Length: 252
Ligand code: PEP
Image (cartoon, rainbow, N blue to C red; front, side, top):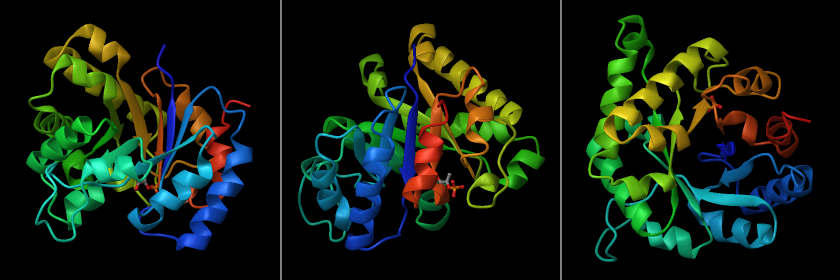
């Protein structure tokens, strides 16, 4: 049985007061959500405050990125994975398409960040997904395979327990254009096949694969009916506690 994960990526939104208010509003709304893990990813500067205020609740906190470097030192502007853990994060998002598109993230840096995050004891949500032209050119699977193989290179079977993959077609992120449940299912099944080839059928069966791209309270249930969909990574709709809770509570 794979326990679903519903994670909210707040991106570069919210000052401290708004972050705390949203987290505190979310807490009671999802308190009975034992069917899934609930995660929010605030900006670095509020991570500790939010994590402290959520202590004892079922809402976990994630970093949105981390340094490729584990060893503390002269890396101005970087935040090491163990610093995020120290601030209260238990999950981390790596390889988000916005970082790949606008901040020079590569499969190589995703792989190094993943290794750093695993060494710090974090659960890694590794994002993969094709651009619209790549899908239209018939290359969606080869792009996703390349991102998976690059990001997961050098991982061992024991690392896999702490890896979650988020399939996020770039054309569906923040556009209001969700992949259909069938399109998502097709790619999720493909991701699972790549894992089975690269690691083992057991590791592939246990892998949680989240869908991301314009997930909303009114489309989550249809997506979650797909057999290879194990949760969601939510951007815009995670910024408001009631809307995000409507996604988390898709079962009730
Ligand atoms: C995201 O950025 O990870 C995302 C899925 O965004 P949205 O839900 O806004 O499409």
